[in-house]
Amino acid sequence: MPRPDITRYATPESRSEGGRRRAEKIRAQKMTVRERLARIAQDEAESIARAYLEALQALDADGNPDHAVRLRAAAGFLAEAFGKPPQAIRHEAEPNVRVVYESAVFGVRSS
Image 1 (cartoon, rainbow, N blue to C red):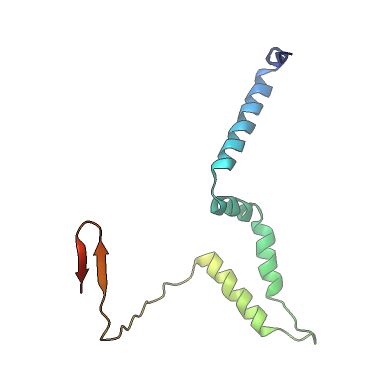
Image 2: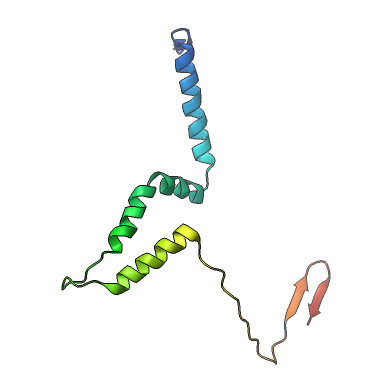
């Protein structure tokens, strides 16, 4: 049985809206997991900020300020807001370590 031609009943507005929804669906399918999570985080920014702010008021089981939780919340909030500061990388190799590079083009080289 052939499908009925419903396009003759569609308005230009409904066609346009259908096209927008289809394009959005295709864009969503092409997004990486990181991009999807970033979109969710953007949409839920107020809730996330509220969670950090509530953690800054954390209390322990006795009703006393839980300073460890508060400090972690403050550090996490600042890191998310401003980024983490660059960390220096320190490498101390053993003096008797020999590094060997193997390349499919140039063969084996050592330093």
